[in-house]
Image 1 (cartoon, rainbow, N blue to C red):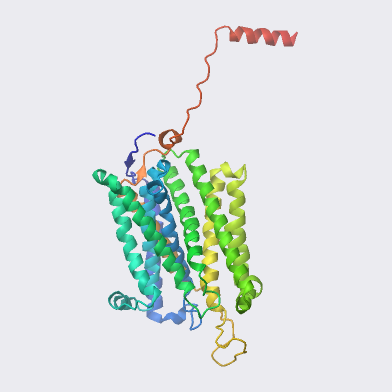
Image 2 (cartoon, one colour):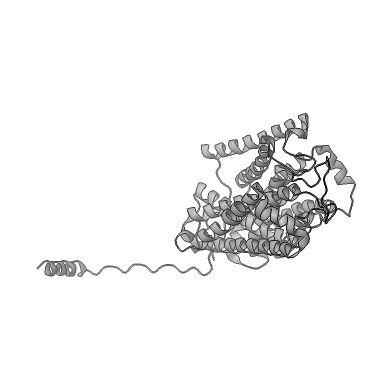
Length: 426
């Protein structure tokens, strides 16, 4: 394996500035949507007393979960010693920080009173999983920042493995904390499950790697940097394993709930009677986000086509958004089971499925978080050398074998071929 060189991108083309302009427009629109919701009150959104976590929370949780998974590529190189992934470690760490920043931006701006964040930062209730997550999110920035410093500073490279191991453990704790937010909520029938924590971990692997693969392919294509087929093949095969694991955990979760009579109501709601939530589960999560990407990634024809691989990664992201939407919104829409075994009716929507329709400001705020994350990546690769000069197989694959050189033609070959053609004509 050759010595890896990293450089910044030129970033002087009109396409680059157009990309920054589009991303900046979405980020500015998100700030405008925030001002609109804060100025008029949250009644202008689709949220209510029944649905208190809306579409912005779907984007925020998705980005936070994906941030942990985006760091997986760096962990493979540092913790598990796979040298082929080493040229990708810097971009992996950058994308992880950017996605977490975008997710937390959406989360903070959707609080209703962003200034109340000061109270959350100064007064802690350690019985709340939300208080734990404040430490996990802030610690992730510190740990990954130090990890990147170890990679950039040549004299600190010897500590990269230790820093990578700490970052690996921390990101598992972060995703466990995010999944436990739902697993600890015993009042909601759709949550209240220990499997939420490991399921969110494998979801992070799938979503984060899908985003990383798209960013890697786009950055190499737009900057005209070589990207080898062997690396793409390894990443897409790993992505397929994660997608299959997400389907497995989702199956186990629903089969376990079907076994317990107390969860029969929520399972019938999600799997059969939930309307939009049932459609998002089967079509969005299972088919678009699971089965079709697996077919594209492992089919002999499409599995070698980079366009199809990129399409599969995009479908995984869409399916992941649908999965998080069903978990967060669908879980709140199903009525609370206050008195098990009894039918409860009142003027306070007891026993009634809550209605929710995402509003434009909510969607714009969520898209603004995505745009902010990508904007951070686009600016960072111009300022610091995050991208390797070459990711060709011959440069990064330790098992690369050069194809044999063509044999030189012998002087008499042309005459022999002419003779053979004459004989065939005769």
